[in-house]
Length: 428
Image (tube, rainbow, N blue to C red):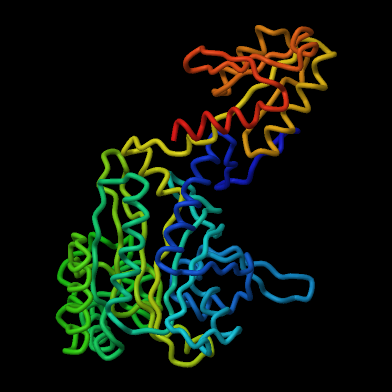
């Protein structure tokens, strides 16, 4: 490593030329959640390991292979959160949000998650997720609302190549019937499968269908489909969900093989894919579904929930693939140039005054000559430039130059902010 300490593998820095994009996405998220009445919840970055073992599931890849788990000084096992739902549900139970008069409780979160996996495009060890959870309703309409919020975020940022894929995982009864059929199907030849699948057979045979190692095994193609084991109630629920999605005018595809990678899902499961050229193998932008037993599993009363999580990194990748430009709204308002040391204090005062009036302003702090300062104003994309020298100091006025048109006018130092505000209001 030498003397250069670098960021750990699978992590990265968001540099200033990129952070404006993140801020635009975050602002869109906050605005959209306000329209849909989802309120923000912020949970700890680390939790007791047991939360994820119980909440995400012992047999999932996340829990068995991907968690950052460590002992603290009190010998407690803690884990950096690998996903958001378990933490939100823990908080929902611990803070008795099920007792609030208005149900469902509609929450959103955004923040870093951690998984120890092989870094690749759009997949990092520390990544940022935006997610929503609506807990306390088993109305099919809320399933459609949650799906539409995700679709709307992508659309509002300018993405067009989107595909919504949905499936029903059924209720407990349907899943047990399907599980038995899967065990009967795979058991006779399970020794041909990988060790993970052999373990999954008893614990959670549905996970075999998700296996990356054995995906080409002939038994995979002929495995019993969950769709054939949905009881009447599950079928009726799924039909209603589809009806509400159609009501919103959203196109979708039903994929009977769609299973989500976490143990807590039932009924509605969905993914939003990017069909953009050059995206690579993993095209999923967002995934979610219903988890009717999770609140009880974590010690709460019966409170059915539905949610989704999306990776912001994958969203940025999709924007890049579709060549959508975002995050260019932080241009500089005014660059104030001081010709010499005596003018610098006045320039400094003007900069302060402009900022106090909500106008972004900057000046030179390296003692450069006029020409170099003009270049700097240009690079920063300044809308206006003010040059202050001896004459300006004597008159108490400066030339306000509009960079786009080249037009300029004389303005008293005290009136500069008001004049710029006036121009902006005329433009609007």
